[in-house]
Image (cartoon, one colour):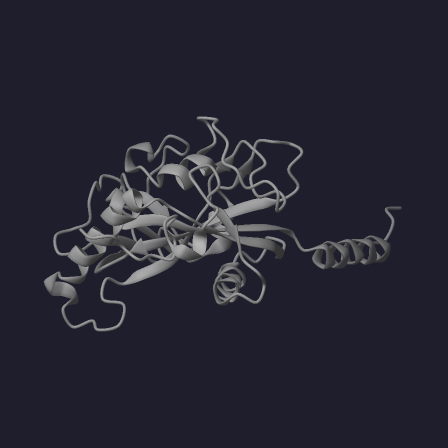
Length: 259
């Protein structure tokens, strides 16, 4: 395959100055990508009992051409499949989906912390550096609703359930947004824990809410079906905290004293 022109490539002319250890490119609030990711994050925050969050920063994740080429090959293969022959727009059904994982460093805690750490247990830096590995499915959570695959979701508050900051000094949370080749999805409402690939003619499994699921999730079973694209940095909305505190105080003062 000839050289690719991908805006997420370290070799793209717009990404000069970035390299293997420095892969996070900050986006300005006026950037088109910032607006898109911001909307997806807030729209996807669906858990009613979870406090609302505020985005502090969004970074574009840059990858090497050697990592992006297999992704491009897989996307072309999926787009050429009979099940998708009639799709003209977004022929491989590529989607931006969330994934939460642990962070054992302070990457992206502020604009100066953009270098990846070398800690083997820091899954965030490992994914940004090497992308996803389906073999690592289940290393953190043993239950695999749709078998051995790479799990993502349109629901940002669901992905947030899997975010872990091991560094106690971290005040912010981070969430990955990924380019996922969904292709022709097999839709399910019940668990299928023995899956290692989607059913014949399909490229992914999409879990729909209803029976075994409260919030949607999308699973792919090929490492080349997904690449990290953006990193969202966020924390609980200060205004939301004030409102919750005010509501609590009002409730306390309205509660009659026990006699």
